[in-house]
Image (cartoon, rainbow, N blue to C red; front, top):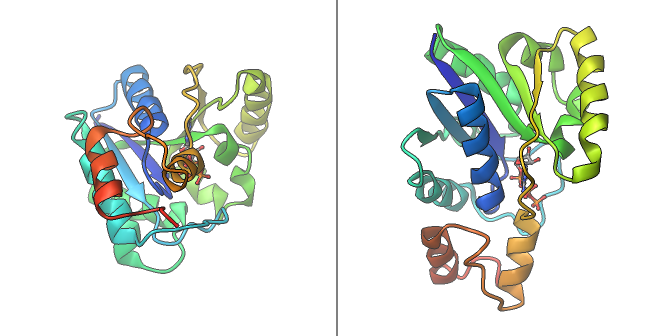
Length: 200
Ligand code: ATP
């Protein structure tokens, strides 16, 4: 059965931390593809300095060129409104009826999963895969995973080394005029600078 890893995020902008966990999970799950899905409007978090969806999508497409199994989907942007993962997974299940879906996320998102829109639908449609975003949190992730298992979720907690990069860090570096070449792929860096994103 085809294994598809689904990685949703605000991707404002996509950065090397995202690519690192996508690559590591893809290897460990033996995924056939990873689909990055930028949110139209992220319902789970405050989004300061949010650049238009089309630009976040474009940067994801550039970053996805780094690995041949990486793809980018605009389904959340085309659907419009708030981007609910349960609806995205329902749509993907129709597009790939025979695939096994794995939903990738970092620790911060994983620990709030029960507050998302329709978590039961998420658990029914995909296995949830999380990686710690700080070294101390592994046991917390594991205990939350056991709790979710009681709710019917299938979870994978993987000890993927944490690459200390966030979109906030990228935006702040750009604003301060610092170099971002160690934080994002080359093409994304060029795109940010050429389009003067995150500068004010
Ligand atoms: P911001 O700094 O604006 O809050 P972010 O860096 O958290 O953004 P998002 O696009 O909001 O990026 O994150 C999408 C997903 O990627 C989330 O599940 C988040 O936990 C995960 N993630 C982001 N950065 C990392 C990282 N360095 N390592 C592991 N997971 C990460």
